[in-house]
Length: 73
Image (cartoon, rainbow, N blue to C red):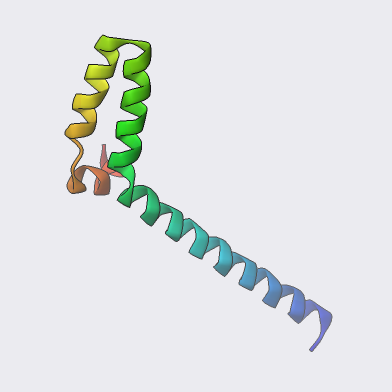
């Protein structure tokens, strides 16, 4: 193979790897969104009781459809 073809092939491989990593991270963050939100709410509550309660109620209102429709708001 010529050097130019190998360079293009390598770039495509890197793009595929980056895309797979991005899809995996999106899936993990979607799956763990409630847990992450609760941890953040707990940290907020440690700083301010009132703000922490607001954060906890916001986390409790998260459901599957809210996560899927984030880009539409």
